[in-house]
Amino acid sequence: MALQRLCRGAGALGCRRSSGLQGQMLGELVEALRAVVGSPNVSTALAVREQHGRDESMHRCSPPDAVVWPQDVEQVSKLAGICYSHGVPIIPFSTGTGLEGGVTAVRGGVCFNLTRMDRITALSTEDFTVAVEPGVTRKALNSYLRDTGLWFPVDPGADASLCGMAATSASGTNAVRYGTMRHNVLNLQVVLADGRVLHTAGRGRHFRKSAAGYNLTGLFVGSEGTLGLITQATLRLHGSPEAMVAAVCAFPSVHAAVGCTVQVLQAGIPVARIEFLDDVMMAACNRFSGLSYAVSPTLFLEFHGSPGSVEEQVRQAGEIMQLNGGSDFAWAREPEARNKLWAARHNAWYAALALRPGSKGYSTDVCVPISRLPHIVGETHRDLQESGLTGLIVGHVGDGNFHCILVFDPADLDEIQRVKEFATRLARQALALGGTCTGEHGIGLGKRHLLWEEIGELGLTIMRQIKAMLDPKNLMNPGKVL
Image 1: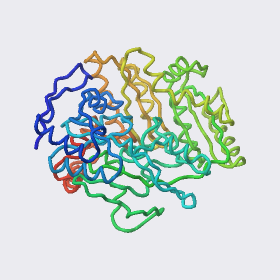
Image 2 (image 1 turned 180 degrees about the vertical axis):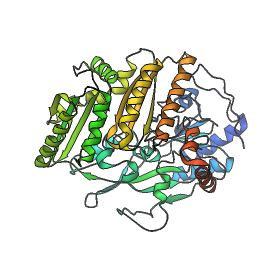
Image 3 (image 1 turned 45 degrees about the vertical axis):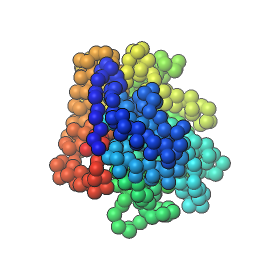
Image 4 (image 1 turned 120 degrees about the vertical axis):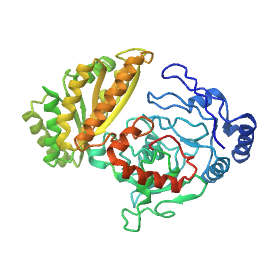
């Protein structure tokens, strides 16, 4: 049965109110859901639905018709089967930290809040693997691993759900050394649209590599909930570094800072993190966090390894930074000092918003080949200055990925339009340089028009065919990606 959506906006970025499913139909569906999980675990309250109809993006809230909290995979399977038989969309939800509108219920339906499935179900320290449910966040996992000598390094900034990170193919500050979620997911348990449960690498398997058939795990990593609900992820763990040293270094220009990044990587220095903040971002961070860093394009770096290898990395990187005009070095070895040094980077989003109290923020990202990074970051910095927008650049430049944080007045429709035009212009420039329109935020709602430009009509057709085969009724997070 089709869902009737009445989109009466409450402001440019308000929540779309809807009568959703019609009375008897909604009542029958809710009763069926309650029969599986119990009445306390189903809600149709407007405030709850609106909370689940938005993420951290600038896209307008679209609430689902109901929210359900399953406790285990068996309940997820039964609930999905009910939605499938009623022709009702299914939208996964966990921490809601996405940046491209991935949880908005554009066709209504049932939001599956998976946060109460929060068990770490299997840990093998000998094999460096762990299996987690979707309610487990990266901070919770690393706290659990604290005394094992292991850690999970993928760090998108927010304390996101690990299964949600798999669904969006998240990345972060450590990707230059440890890879993205695509490199660190070994197996997935997925509930398909009709309720069937798939183990993408076989039930209970956690091998490091395989040549057995199609890579089903890779298919679901980055699928953004459009192919199935990820109810368990088996992840690759890494040994905790024996030593860590962090550094901050200012540069005379954007080109010098980003060019230094390329040279550090070309020298084969196994840097763990290398982050870029432009001068506008540094000024905002100083103001917000009470810091006194130079207001210049700046690199934040971190080195992992044995004490001897870290010292050698620091020496080599320091020489390259000095050759590129680097100055105002700040080094930190103890955990407290490193955390303080990284405070500016971790608080960048809030520092940007503080530039205009009452404003909203939009973070867009692109990724290009490393050799083209100095060019595109320099051009983007110039574009921001000429556009009249309040924009800041921060990025995981070690893997060619950077973000523009755009701060705008949510009541100014002209400014909102200029923000959208800038984001599209940036993405198209990345595509022209052989890059991608998104390195880690995903397509969601906001970049669907750019996906066609990136992969072409045939690529999009193949994606649609895969979607139709796994989700013939188009119920899994409809309106996203494709």
